[in-house]
Image (tube, rainbow, N blue to C red; front, side, top):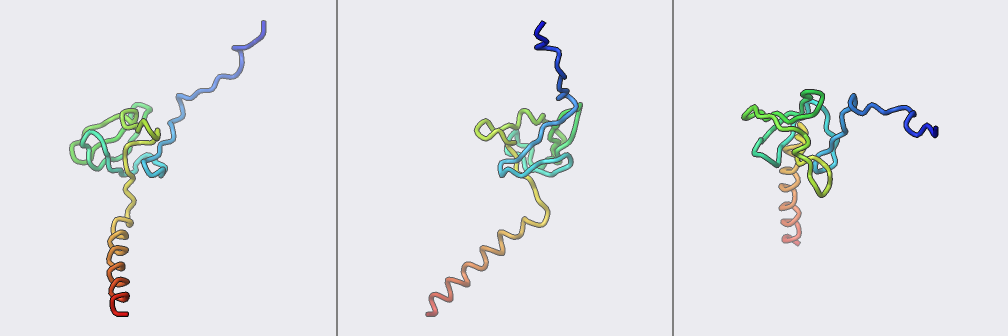
Length: 106
């Protein structure tokens, strides 16, 4: 009669959701992350049974992405591990004492 239910149906089952870590960095399959729940440690984001899951590199345990949602931000309760950025924080800390020494000399 009014054709309310005869429109095109969207098939969302074929598409995986877009995931972000606590710092709003996008996550993709194969990314290494640090899990902040379930004592998983370092994990790899994998696709399992047409859904995302986190596989622990230490124990081999897998946890669904749904269990890792942060209720406050709706992001994943993980931090993405970016190769090459782990040492940058140390360099910044070392430069600060040099600035303090210059102030003392004056």
